[in-house]
Length: 580
Image (tube, rainbow, N blue to C red; front, side):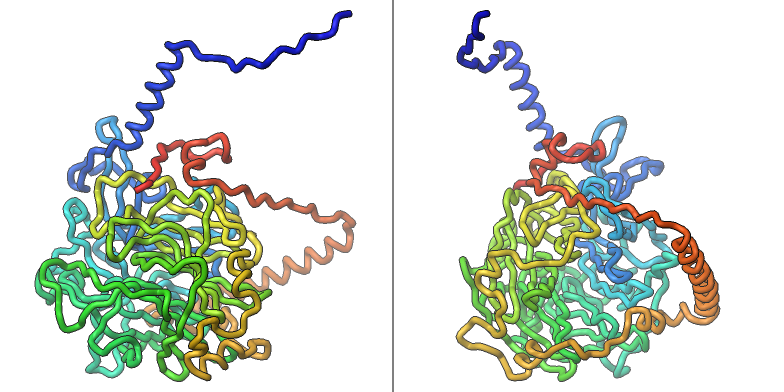
């Protein structure tokens, strides 16, 4: 028997014709990905053509969103969209305002290519108007929207949701019922009566959970926020709205101590820090500032001066009604000044640190330049840390972010630029998921991703820090006391108690009585079910099966868009990467 002969392995080669075919196919794919779609306004396509953000997504930006129902869902509203459709059997794009209020279910795992979005279509005559970059609040039972501007741009201004200048309504608050999915206007009260409350755009909003307090900071007025402002007009707004959902009282508070008296602030984030047994602090980071006495008379958009993030941030003591400027420092590299970013706040229970994640956006100096990666402000060290995201190949602005467990959800967004580029290619997905613990983009959302744990980049500089790292230290003894106070013995209202007493006026009466009745019946049925299960368990020795959790792997956005075999199956759609 002869021994087998082992020769040198030779890689199979392609013949010239076959290689040429592959080359031509690759070129055609690249050309198709870069080719813009023929665009239409809503009036230029057949009235029978239907499209939705979920089924025809190309991109959506300038929307608002908020977590509701104890962070088990996200409500998304407003914004401007580019829909991918078929016109005369060919791929095309329709530019329309987002006429849907959407609810994203966070109770189950899902692939980012097929998110569980429930879409509720708005009636343009009776429901809340569609605005861009407005403010959004919630009170446990309702989502509340206010502010924003009414877009007036070619093609989008032919939407059924478009408002001519003469029809732009005065300041108003609308409530979306989380159970009935119905919109209704809120009969709010301005305090004092002679106070000025006007619609603003591009401010920052937040609610203090279970404390009946919501805020909207900054923004600017423009020719598209009011029917009474001049055309080609915009001017910075200096102030902060405070709204109490239970009493429906709204106030325009002073922001004395925040910047200079003649400065307004736009494009940023407002986050709530629940510290100690108090109402806590509001953390404000705004990216642009402008004069409140020198209106822009060439455009209804505003382009303010850059506000550096690396030197200080602003903290608002809710109980004391005081602003504090807290100095910050940074490691690795100075944070890029960016605007139209999104942000999310995470808490590491092990180190008792609060980490503000800021992602994406665009340069203030060069709006066409997208900003890559993420920066994290970790507190109480108040240190900015640059986070490297492997294979981070996307550039987005005017999106929204939410922290869910150890994940940062990035919703929507468009190509960077001072103006919206209608020729911008489609994004791969409406929802992108960033693993904050380990870094990297994921191809799926996990409803049980585990608790947030600071990445090693942050722990290396700020693990177990109890005070700021900057030479200036604490801005005041009060801020130091709040960050060092314990929440162990605090008695805060439960979410259920807060939800029971928070609802717009028009939702009380018969509706509330019916709700109580249904609740009582549901309670009786629940007790009966529990009793049945207890009796059944006594007669059974069968153990409940253990369900394995598959948290998926990390992928680059390009791999998810082009290497479909490397990920679980996605819906059949053309995926185009935005690399500009």
